[in-house]
Length: 536
Image (cartoon, rainbow, N blue to C red; front, side, top):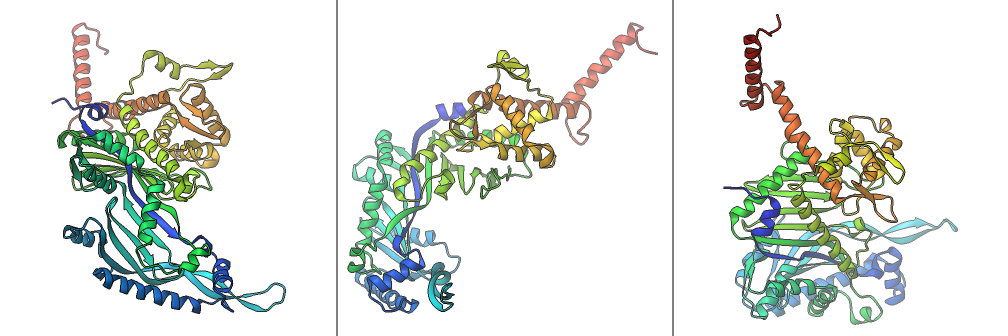
């Protein structure tokens, strides 16, 4: 059977292709109660206390916990203590099987977790030299209450409240559960994956539902349940402007491509893993290039291919965010960008920024799929090969050729393969750090001038381009094909071929090139001997 390429599998074997918000984890907080001064103002100015103190927080917390107990009794739901290390999803899944109502509270979970509350410290006045009390953040272990809910429009979700001041909460919902509920309400038949769709009678309608899930709909959902659940703050507090706001802690943007049969999906992942192992110079089963983008950039970017059992997955990291790609339930390719810090992309955390994050997430998914498709279609026309390997004059500037036998050129092409998935491109400093390590040189020996020279060569040959109004570069489509072609030829043909040809791999059980060359050499020796031309 002829094994198809990634592009052919995605074009010919996909029966359903949807992209939408997957898991969304939101922060529900009081903006005016995030600083010590704001807390002091709440108690002294708003509530009229003579002295602001943490003692004033305890009655609010006790009243809130009692309100939760009364709510549980009134709704007839159980408060379930979670054991340390217990999987909350497993508990919820079991209870969902027996839940027959279209909407309601499933149960309330209770767990001890860390929380950044406020405590009092003494400060010394710079003017009077006298001590005075001050609120500061401090970590405490306290009870958190998980309200597991089933919503008529969104399906299962939870809202988690801390029982300590200022009672910050978390909201977790799932866009794929939302589309299932909406399809069911519209009477459109569909087949379900654990977290997605396997089939749908109206795929276009399903995609429109996913597209229509926006920040207004989500904010309305949260407001609806906040109106039903116990509230640690009074109506007077809310009227004075002490209201909860939503921000984004984590957002997952997924593309799900369902294959006609499991075998097609398995073939795809075999191809994906093979390509990434060749490009990344793996150590064991991981492709890790743990490199900083700049000296000030927190975190790292990396790519890994890992296998759990027989299910492989690909992980591409950028700062604190990542793209994960895996074969879901033996039927679907899930490509999923998880944004853990919106500031990685210069975007604020407010829920109103969801459209901008959505665009980044879906673009990253498409880019990864594009790279995987192009990686098997990187043959170069003779004109392009000559353009890259021969010196060129562009706009009066001479660009030396890029030769396959130059280790520095190979390092540049490998770096292009590693940097091409970065959503914001790459900068001079990040590329220089990687190049110095790839060439085995101290950073000082691969100077900024040498890096500038190499970037200029790549740019004049049309392999990279500068992002407008920035100091960043990105890999062009031609640059991607050229980099993949050169790295493949080196890693798959030249290096293993020459190793076998010159016995550089003595433990290899099968060396067809060396064997064939040995036969050729023997035949030539015999021919020269018969012609009396053999050297004496």
